[in-house]
Image (tube, rainbow, N blue to C red; front, side):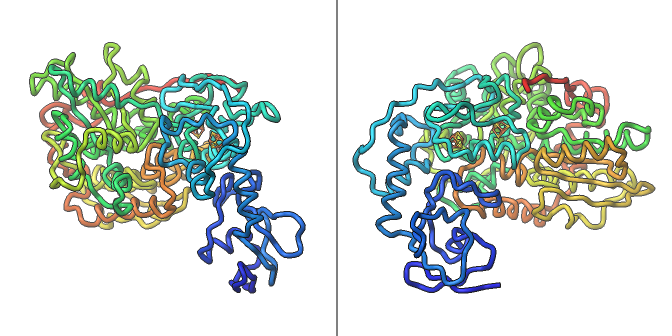
Length: 574
Ligand code: SF4
Ligand code: SF4
């Protein structure tokens, strides 16, 4: 039911049951918020969204108060603006004030509010926070001195991701945010997904940067530096340069990276094809040999860490395939160096990923060879943008270029791994060929393309009736594991991505206000799949050549040695 309300002396239409904030937002009236998270239950704790409602003596938090017919609201009266201004001034009173040195300089909500509210003097001087930052984690750095206690990271970690690592610790003005028992992040249950960084309005959480090491490697004469670009980075980086969300600039990035000094620029979508080849062979083997089913995917390192911490009993269900990042790292180190006579000691391998957990993955002991990591540095999409700016290259002054031989060609199936359900679609295409000897008729599986974070589809392939599920949050994976333990047996493959929206929504992606950005990136990936002439990994000529010249066959001796891995139970404090 719709009814009128009056806002700033104008009538607008509200919907019964919605909050004042939602009604304002729908009508294009922006009210600032800090603790509010769309889709989650409002807490009203930051009081930035307060408005004046006629007849109410106190200001009302618009995020938690429902609309009433003909209520009269003032959203930016002097009283309201003053209250918001005082809130921000109090937050600033004990803030470190080191904006020029901060990771979020230029993209900080606190900084923007101070500017919007015209705060030009310090009215309150509080005791400065002296908390030390925590750089112990492989991927994330916590800087509690910059935390404004909005709780967005806590709610993201708990309600969206399902890891429940962060919480409020202590009371009153001694309250901080941290993992249980205020332990360091490296000792906590953090799965390194980076979604808390995406949620944080300030520089209190950010990724551990690898770009300084890379800059040194690029300027070291003897070092051969190669980079691989993840399937989702090509459709996400544009936003960092003020271009339209979802614009595919993969070819421009190839050109720019060559100018910054990389010896070779490879495409991780190529090794996504390799992953799909190995995964399909493993799946076929399990199906035909009474193997452990359902099989869970293994390409999301945050999911793998979660599984090792909380569900190590399902290790036999998890695919043994390394992720595409690590597969390409292993092939570069063990095949490319030999073929092109490059001393492995002089090789420096970089990956550009949408993901903070990939930094953790590259350091796993199972991903090293004689103590040397197959991937030396992992840059998030944000770091890649900063690296390009540092090197003074104007992205748009370039022509598109292809990736470098021999890891240059991809199918669109490899590209699909960037979106939730995409790996399952790619696997089904491959499995169909393995089980029937024929290409699948309908490449597009609509059930796997919905925007839901839990999707299922049942498909008959040859003699097998197979059930597939794709989830994007470990919360849903948890639920499925419990169902399987309770006897559910209609699923054969489960794809798990830790981040909402999959890799295109990963924790290393641009931090943008535009809620449509993830949708635009997803759309771009599906458009690539629609247009691409090669839609299946087994028809990628570069993959065919790699198996012919080096690997032998999927799941064969060499693949097992280089492309497969193992997992272990991890203990974390409870
Ligand atoms: S990285 Fe992910 S798991 Fe770790 S604290 Fe942040 S949201 Fe939680
Ligand atoms: S770390 Fe960031 S998101 Fe978490 S409470 Fe502090 S300011 Fe908010």
